[in-house]
Length: 232
Image (cartoon, rainbow, N blue to C red; front, top):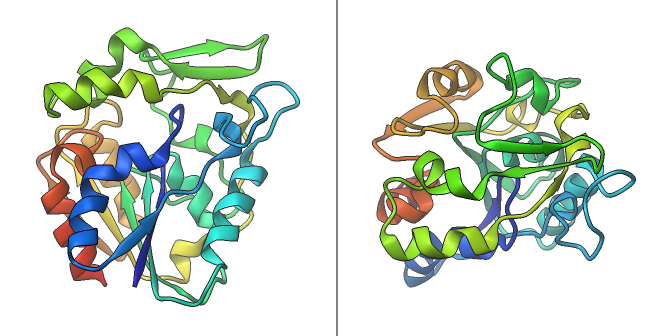
């Protein structure tokens, strides 16, 4: 078994965001990988007008999923659920989807359709450049309030400006309709309100709640490890 972690919006270095849970899984003999997302500038081309968007992110993740036939659990965080809906569709090795404070779009839906009625206050949107990002001064209080000081201090170094076009690009498949899925509601999440998560979770096969913020794989790695192992 292996785990493929698909990180959320406006960050880079997925392996860093995942590292605490990955280390615990490795101790149990489970390896993981975190594909680079081109729309976050992780493939050498900056995001923005004319830059890579959702289709490039889907291709990057799908390429990793199609490498080998080992049974795979995909852990999709936040925006990662949009990518995974298309990237994991029809890939025989994918046995389970774990959506963490994430989205399960129908075919034709886009990230923008999952909002809460307006731009989130923690985002900085540059329409001219065609990018958006998390306001660094709001990062900890919004997304990492339950993490330890070391994680909080290092997280800003792993933020990224992302292509704004990913918010409006629709997905072409809905893997969660074909593959068993579990939704992890993060009950202390200040970025994606739990009430919205519970609405999104209705499409999943199973729902689990954890008393954690937006990044439980950093703040509660043992709990996330156990959940992944149970799914496997």
